[in-house]
Image (cartoon, rainbow over all chains, first blue to last red; front, top):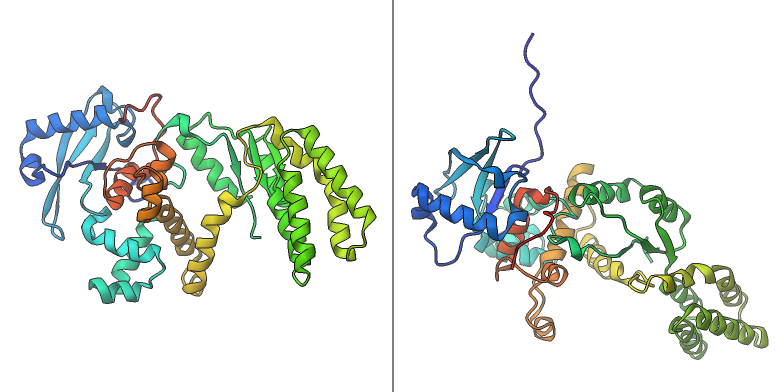
Length: 164
Length: 225
């Protein structure tokens, strides 16, 4: 009998967004295994909330992902304890490498101010579906997990309501 | 119940020991029941602003009465303690007895007496919100955006994803320059809540915060500076 396949999780749940300092050359860093490991360790120490639980116990590099859209290479890591692999995406590209953060910045700003996707495509180029998919992809993330990064900041109470 | 359940599940995953002490909503029983079922032991506070708005809307054609009532209602709201609140409400109801008000407004004001204890609960929790206008502001944005795009056009799941994306955009959008200057350079609501930001660019800040889709329980002590 064929082995049952594991249920696919939500896209992005296994992607770590790695902070990349503005003065750092990512292309060189990602190729240099030792320098990359050192940089990654620094980031884990500085922002543990961005990395999976158990990463403190160690990780090992687990291959590459090459993006033909953005022409960049990203590394993958494996946590031996949980046997789970994660992709390390730099913070200057959007999920699925669909767009650079620089362009997404402008598109999402226009979207926040209510401009239609057609309007965004007129201003920034590409198709309206491209910008639609980019905005939709944000909706996969956790509503409460994204904005709240410190425990003591949890609101003491909540307020919910229906439309006035 | 379903919608608040999503919040409860995501919050429980992110911070397993998170249990809100109070919730401030309008007087709709279904909302209240949902919160009390999802978070047993939660204290329900009735939003005072909803009552003020309901009464205000009944006297749109009588501007002088409208202003007089608003002043009296906010005077009750500004009471410093439960005792003060009850006392000011009694004075208000005595005033209602002495004057002739339109039937609908009179009825609304008299109903405040029965609701008084639900308003007063807020005095037991000094950090609790007494009105729900913290939620109204983002909902105004949601209303306007949905009106402009003539609501949703796709499937139920795409509509859900769109509204979640709108909510996240709201949480990370950069404040205007005037607000930033008034808030000592605070970039966005995320920074306002957490007290730090990952990056000066708001999208990169959003992307970093969305590492692992935000689905990682909070570390015991975040070391982020």
